[in-house]
Image (tube, helix red, strand yellow):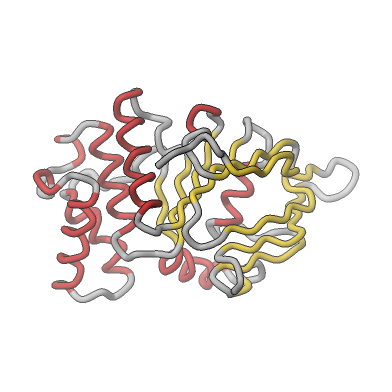
Length: 232
């Protein structure tokens, strides 16, 4: 059985030539279905570039990327957009909610783009909001919720269509410590429920919550290990 995520010898080079920058330098990794992986690195390490590759937001200069069995490394922008919509649930540091929509409507929006019928959209959005503990806030708008609640709406939006990959980019970056713990607990529960979670962070404490840790530095993977201390 092939891995859910399979990156083979990927390079991303900016300004090719004498002043080239190798943001990713022959990176290879695989992630199986149902893993909880943290990719950690400081600013300039290449982790954001790697996240963009994994999220089909960019294409590599060389190398291949198979997502759910499909080679996505050479797709056009439109094809990548289609893959992102179907295969990846994104959770961003900045929530990216639409202010004049309720929690339910924010969760439904990507489902509209996928052509999901209205009744099914409503069912999926309510189901995912219940999973993140917001059954009582479905009709509230973002400005009526705390930062932690807004991020839970963003998680509900990411998981509603049941995509194979949940890609969380610094999901606790804008939250206080209490809200951060709540968000990490939700991600752990998703993992325990069989979801594949890829967490991008610069914080060792956050990375230590994941079952597997991949450390990137200067465009190279320098560590890749199972975190034996984590108990779910």
